[in-house]
Amino acid sequence: MPDKKSVVVTGFGPFGVHSTNASWSAAQELTKIGLTDSVTLVTLEMPVEYKAVEKMVPMIWEKYKPDLVVHLGVSGIASELTLEQQGHNKGYEKMDVCQRQPESPICKPNGPDCILSSIDMASICNDINSSDCKVKAVVSHCAGMYLCGYAYYTSLYHNPSCSAFIHVPPLNKPYTAHQLALGIREAILSMLKHIKPTDNS
Image (cartoon, rainbow, N blue to C red):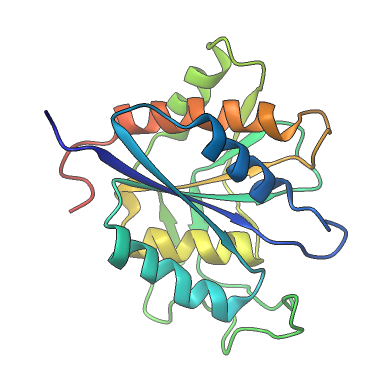
């Protein structure tokens, strides 16, 4: 029997007006429905804190050695699953929930301005939108200059071949946590098909 695939999904904790963060609610629902018998799923909640992200993201790659990492975040302007194609290195000046900024507005001092995920998000988007899933998806090229973008760039810097970020809309605008989880499940299964076996080495 082939080895199981390993997927780590993160969602963020509360911040600002998002006392219940839809990204973590969706991740929790995903845990309930699972992926497939051939995939081990790990879900983790990340605080909306730069120092927490700086510690947790490298730990995820080191501890779990995942075939795929998918970070989830909530976007107040989103109405679909928003698949982020790339992460940006500069511009992180907004205070986190602890009223702290990163030591530098640059995520990785020696990193390029932008890193693209090797996963073709347009293909993933098409797979979601052509599936039986009721949730719709779009592609974006800016994950934002807050903790979402910070976490995504950190993972892309580690391994762009199997890193992804999905923004979700707030709960019930228009999707429930369960509906979001079904859409995310569709996205992950599609991503696993697009990742080559050696991409996570």
